[in-house]
Length: 523
Image 1 (cartoon, rainbow, N blue to C red):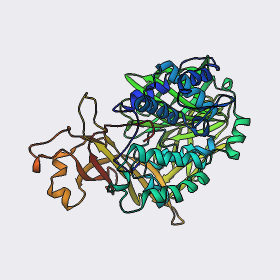
Image 2: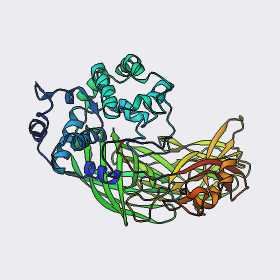
Image 3: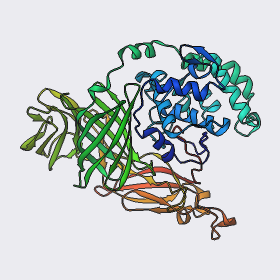
């Protein structure tokens, strides 16, 4: 999210610790949830019958949202609860009072820790809510009007100066919050709606998840990855997980771990791949998984992930997804239930099928020298759904992400550095003049001052180093006596990508700012 001010209720805990609480599977009997509610929550929340309680039963949230609520009760109200009971309670509440899949569409980036996402909410929500935390945190909960009003009052009670601080004094914050935002939020994000009612009826059984899942992914600066994830059932909607795959450069992607399923489709897992501890935040629906894996201690280091279960005929990806006219290359089709003859569209000839399994088809292809610029629909028998970009020239280069935040920090300390990670995305123009995405191409990387102030302050010298692979490593935290007025190593930089082939350039924006002291599961 394009913000540097994040609030939450976990004190100075890191997101790794908080999400570790959420993601460690713990098998409990279904009746444990109501029992814990009665023993731990009834002292403050009034029973309303049928295992319902004041406030609690009038909200719906993601697993991360319920985790933050319980943590807030611990920090602010002295709730004493064990880690095991907290996990049980999160599971119970997320199952009983979660969100339907359609209610999380467009805002899953917050759960998936895509912290460089630039949000696109209307001005009212962005200015009234998104100045202190992400708009997604609001959009990932459901309440009736009275509960939204309680939330407004909670904000003012917890932060009494809210109305008068610089981000609020340009408006009558409380009057707008109560008279305009409460009705608006109750209409946009209501407690009761058809989506939730329908999901409760159609919620699938977790018994369908064990088996093999063919997966495809991409990690910025590292490249494409593919393989098979094997899932085996454990008690209480928990699973054992093993992955076996590799990156395009041949680096192994092998490991094992565990996962838990919330609300019929919210998959959360811990998998150790090599020496890295990775989190999994996926949506699992209709035999497919979509989401992100990221390092527990460095959520900026992550990969997009999609998978299809064995028995589901699905073409997930072609790797790489681009081919230059006049060249030969090896392409790999990734998916599940793969069978049939591969085809890559006009001007692309299949020279040889090198390997064919239900999860992977490797082929040697050649693009004609006069092949037209543009995307081609890829097919394998009756399977379709992915494209191959054929290009002769690159018309534009985009730095991905276009906007990024890195953070100074301590090597091995409690507030580690947050890197900036970039790739050069090439675009072309088809015969119709329309722009189309080619894909990520090798580039040379550099940084420059973003503006005159950054040049005057020598931000390029002090903020950190851009590596050859597109990874920006920020400088250390704390005052720097070499800088003007002894300030820290923050900076405002322009990121420059120059394609190794052709030399075209693209620009991005990188803010190097201070440490993440508070880092909630939902920013």
